[in-house]
Figure 1 (tube, one colour):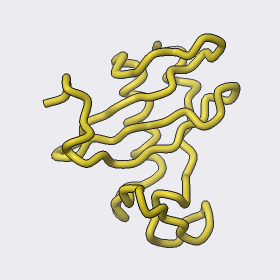
Figure 2: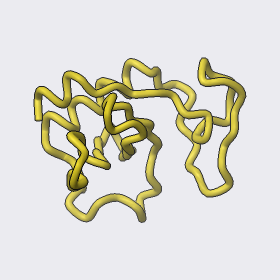
Figure 3: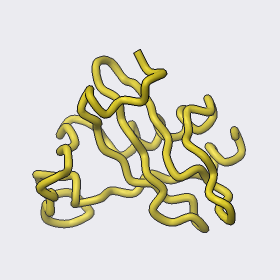
Length: 106
């Protein structure tokens, strides 16, 4: 898992932004939780890598080297990272509503 964690990359997604980012203008989906403005790409990537290294992940799909989902709790927020490019190890992430937290997270 540590090898996967070191190779994984967080990629900005405008679908979870209600503000302009290097990913472009905001395209917040109506069903998406907006990302907090004060979180940097570097922070999000660090949390992604910590989650992967800690094994806080969902299952690996049959032909993918990376898990489809990973979770990290930071303060009172839980962030979910979703694999968006299996070959490159790219993930995008977003905060979850408390009702969506995995049951093992307190």
